[in-house]
Every structure is written in structure tokens, then in C-alpha cells.
Image (cartoon, rainbow, N blue to C red; front, side):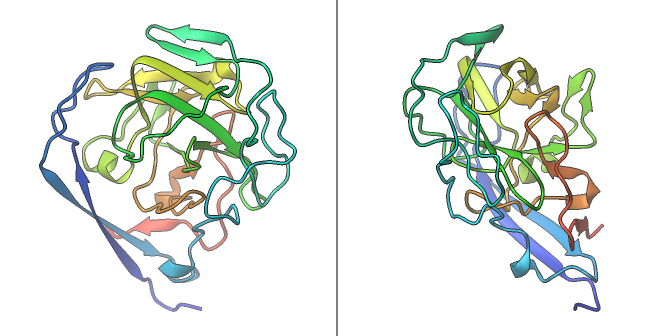
Length: 253
């Protein structure tokens, strides 16, 4: 057991964050790199950084769910899997439209390659559900990367309060025009987007904007769970998932 707080310094370099254009408008990526220091400390009871939650799904990638059906429902058991590897038998239909974004009734019947760069906007977004015994069901993107919500945001009206250096550490899930969102195991009526202060558009679930965590290195990582007591993997209904014992990480400041 640790007897003192330990500080983990995570230094990442993000490119292309400057000069972001408005919703749906292409921007020219900047060649300037932004060094990102993120200082986090653990409580005395927490394990060292290398023993963090990491991959809570028990796999290095989103594992096909044997129980998932063509209706788009994920696995209901822990340890967890996301969407089924098989394509749905019925082509999804448009369940909701928000200006230039179409939100479909279920998963796409075609393979979609998610953007590898978390900071880039995409025309097509997949949202899947992963079941886990420790924290409950949570939402990932089409690559199995965990999505989070922030307690300092507001649901009514939906608004992100994570900008600047905060958004460097917690990149928002961005969509651009013409946009399509394919949910698997999430009510499409709960899905929307909000316009950020920099005029980019961020996907939201039940009014809560969703984010990645820069320190999540691979699909299934949930290293952002409980950070500062305000960041939690988002559940399919937009709620907070359970905290992990020994977490959260706490800010060094």
C-alpha cells in the first residue's frame, strides 16, 4: 500500500488543434505541435499508475458480443463486449435529424473506419455499448475507445465547459457536415450534438457532451474514470458510471 501521493506526469503532443473552423466546415490542419503536460496524483490508498484501471474490458480491442442481436443491443454481461461483429440484417433508418446530422436507428450495415486521431472531426460516428462488472455499461466509439462525461458541463441547456487546456487532455468527440451517427444499444432519441465555443460540433448523449481521455492508449482503457471526481465513462442513458475503488486520480493543483 502506498503511503504517499504519487504524481504521474503524462506528456503528449497534439497537432492540428489550432485554427478549428465552425460546425461542418473543413479546417486546414496546423503543423504546430502543442505539448500537453497533464499532472495527476493518486490518493494514498490508490495503486501506482501502472496498476490503474486500464483495460477493464479484458481485451485489447472491442470484442464482438456473442449475445448481441441485429437490433443493435450490446452484451448484457460483464467483462465485456461491445457490438456484434455481424452486420445487422435490417438496414438502419434515420430515426432523428438535427440540422445536417442524421442519427440512425441502429448500427451501420457497412464497415466504418473511425478516425485514428481523437482530435479530428469525422463525418460518420459509431457509438457502441460495453458491459463491465466494475463500472456498469459504458459507451465507446466505433474503435472501442471509451467516451466520458464531465460534471462541470450542463445538460439543460447542453453545453461544454471544457475548453483550452482542458480539451487538450479531454478531446471532444467531434462530428462535421454532412454527419451520420450510428448507435448500437443506445436510444437514438438521446443522441445529438452541441456547438462548442470554438464553433466545432460535439456529440452528446442525453444532453451531456462526450469526450475521450488523452491518457487512454488502447481500446478498453478507462484511465480517466473518476479523475478529479468529475470525469466518468458515460452510460448509454447519459448518466455516470460507477467509480473504481482506488480511483479517482486527483489533480496535483
